[in-house]
Length: 483
Ligand SMILES: Cc1ncc(COP(=O)(O)O)c(C=O)c1O
Image 1 (spheres, rainbow, N blue to C red):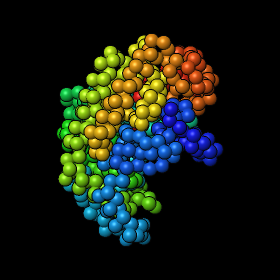
Image 2: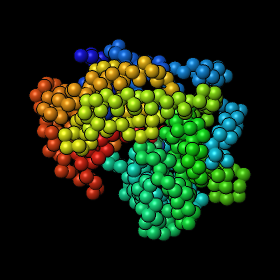
Image 3: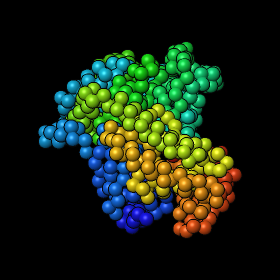
Image 4: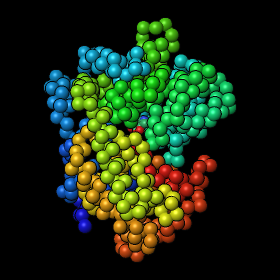
């Protein structure tokens, strides 16, 4: 068995000084108990933890490290930029160069404004839409897992403590691929919706005609269409999913892979709207992405290197290819084990996630935990199977072999009960209402015997906060985790 002693000690110390891991989706509660590796370094698609364990890593940096860790062409440009200094009293010349480059690349980008995080960009998009339309409400796609750390989105999640009810009431939700569903929102709140925000695609592909219908509905009801390309940008294509699917957003947002893990985001869109954030127009001004550490020359240098690499090396095609090989290999070993109904890959090849199902065929956090546990033991760190361009055939082979070895353990869990093979408490969704010690979810000790009921006692909604069911019903629904 792998040794996680140093990672465990680190987690205990971190708990006393950091409330949650920096990013909840990276939290120790997202990993099997006592098996949450703390990372020391990475190279390509591999990382090493502070106990010295090596892993093939998937979904790195919440999908931001699209070219792999330590990708030298990006690092070289960043180093060169750093040597010229950081953060001046006036803009650096590279800001115009980078904005022009992005505007040439992204179909819907007439103007560009840079930020640090994705949430900066999505929140700025909605502020702009509210100012442009003079309306307060925003319609958010309910089937997409994450849009922002700000109130307008977090207020719609289970983890909405601290967010005023007044703010929550301004966000309404609509289903993906369901034009009548969105039309119903417009009808319920006539003349009140400033913007519709969604990702172009997550695990479900867009239905034929969906984007044209979306555009038409937004136009008819006077709302702006905001496309969140945080994940699809520089993964589906360097020109965005809007290019692949011929979508015509008013505004769109980029981040994550934009600078291969360096903090950089961008809000882009129609000049008529974006101009409200400028100073050259006699109109009420929108405070739009104005940050102490914004538009740093080194982050912009990283972005330029990412764009060069995508264009030169056909990175988007390579991601699809690596993902397709991984999918084919995994699906084959799962089918050989007769478990295709229980362990399933979903999503586009460049962005694969998995669902682990229990004996009833229901998405299960316990079975997800078992998958994580067995893969970690075999040197595969896989909260998802999202590849980077650094995932070479050896990495794909190692991951497929690990899944093949997982299969008999999975079978045993189905036949004899998950408690016979799972060593600790199950993982839980990152954006949930309550902490790990919530009633009805006992802490579990290591061992082979079953240590908690296969249907946890809290399943039937043990607690209610602001009308929201907080416990297992919700956690089973989102058994894939977030981000
Ligand atoms: C689709 C999407 N939009 C926005 C965000 C927010 O980005 P950030 O965490 O950089 O603020 C995320 C983060 O996971 C995301 O997945």
